[in-house]
Length: 238
Image (cartoon, rainbow, N blue to C red; front, side, top):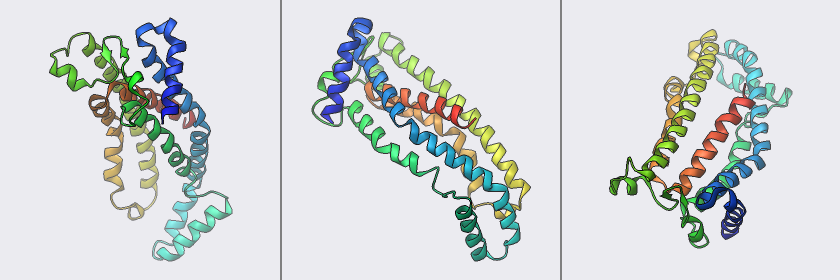
């Protein structure tokens, strides 16, 4: 973990002439973007897997109508279809899961919970707000509308904009998926799928809660990673 911290601190030293007191904050943003760029091939693999599965949905719907009274034959036919088309049911999930260790390491580093090696990093500031501080600290000091409060207000604005973008995009995607389900038999829908579809568009807004409760260094990581994900998915799943 200290290796990651040292890399970010060295990057902050390089950015010092440009960003001065906020060099460490800029280093966190840049380092997060670089890591996301490294795992981008996994995201592309996940997108290819999802497109491949989506292309099979009309044929799977036909199988559901054909074997609606025989679930065992339906499962066998669906597996045979995936095998025939060389599409894994997990092709869009595994690449995303493989990204989690990198994200976990970054979050641990920037939240200061790794212990050792991050003290120098978290001792820096983003404008008037310390990277080790939280929004609750700003509120406790009565600085909600002060210089430090404005830093958090800016982060909340970015997260709100990204969450709204994700909300609109997810609603559109869910509506398209719902139209496909209606075209088939209503009885083929997975129990509870409708409730999940209603909640899913709002999940992005939970990022606001995360930014509000974690240290500012971790909040910068979350904002950068979330924004990257929104742009990445918009490009890969267009």
